Image (cartoon, rainbow, N blue to C red):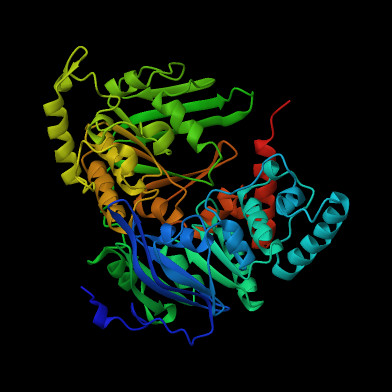
Length: 548
């Protein structure tokens, strides 16, 4: 294990106020009740650099950046912006200090245009027409200078996520941001869109802007940052020059132990089909086709991954397969051969040995006001193991919950704690433990490691491979292309509600990325990545439009 004394670079307590710092934090501490989220943090972000911040879920990254942007006020400590001490107690204070933030979930008004979103709250006085005219000219300048081209008159809700993210960056620059905080910016992007974002960040850096990048993707840290700070349990344990470190060293510093960054699995031994889908289509309440004529099968002893940018039908497919919504046409058959496509009955699916880890744990996986032990049996609460009729055996329920909490390292290990009081990663593990430990024949799992720290990711991946090796059929949906490639025995690519191709796990990121953008590798030959990306963006935009 790496100790603090063995790590090269600047260590905690070495705040150098003489350095040309865009941002300097000194002695920042923040508590929420008994929980110490940040503890005596010193951090220097040098001007004109891209500075990464990594750490496990609950390490304090988001709290620290929320203090810098004014969402929270520190209990103690000081903030310096370009050497000047600043009191930041609200986002307006941060904006006035030249700090902007691009949130993981965009803060945009969907039915406003790009220009209207950019100037919202900064209209330029009572003469709106004059303010809009000046804003349009400034927006054009920013687009040219930072390679952030986007139609100012386009309605934001009609834009693909890659362009919506550009609007967020333009908003911050329009308000005069010299330092830009980006929170998990690539979570909803294709590889080509992520590459374009990195070109934008490099362009911002070349123009003297400073970027703070919060991400759990160590590969992105290595590719784009100049320096990286590692947080663990509310403290910064090291700040390193990126060129002088490795992903393995960063992971060990984050977790405090050695972490295996690759998925170890042998060859699959597929058996009989346990899930068969034929010509499945799903139309939503507005008459928009979300899944179109999809066919595939998942066999015993294999993991089939579905790759695609979020919003291309994966969610609706999982909902139809799990019984949450009925299919419009087509067939869904489990091992017993009965067609389930028209029956929206999740309880019946569970009785048929199909389990489902939903993509959105808050909306579909948990009741946040329930205790952990109650969520641990949600959907299975009528099982005779837990009591008879309306009377539940609380002792049996809590005993089983404690066992699962220990097995899945759910912290704190208190089954009586309200689920809302667990971190996002631990909430995810509550759902995974509930579904995976029911010994299903078929497991549908959406975004299994969303919001989960790097140590828990290793554990979850191991559990999924163990289920495969035990002869289970697993359908995996993830926006993390690395996760899809590492876990899947076969990869299906979805675009605009259709399966556009199948590849093996050896397929390159570039090949899969083109398919995710709606361009087959054959069609993409001879055109630039930007052209392929533009085609994909137009396809996604048209797919999202309601059909007449």
